[in-house]
Image 1 (cartoon, rainbow, N blue to C red):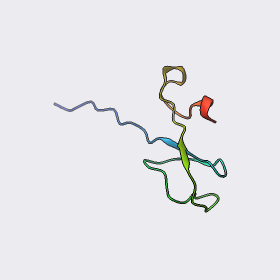
Image 2 (cartoon, rainbow, N blue to C red):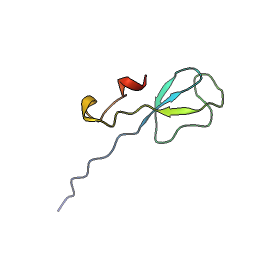
Image 3 (cartoon, helix red, strand yellow):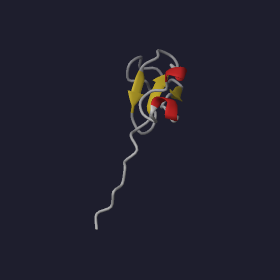
Image 4 (cartoon, helix red, strand yellow):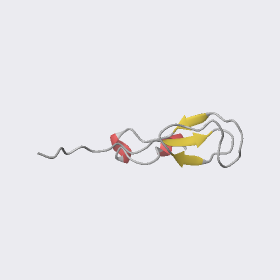
Length: 60
């Protein structure tokens, strides 16, 4: 019997320096847009209001 597994999409990470947003499993050490070592904020939607998908508009 085949298992019906839903794969969780990769989270969205926003660079605190330039605001670039990327969707990858873990934030990089260096931002691919500004090429700085930046802190990344997880801005993924984890609430029913935005359907548990995409970027949480409250965190933009």
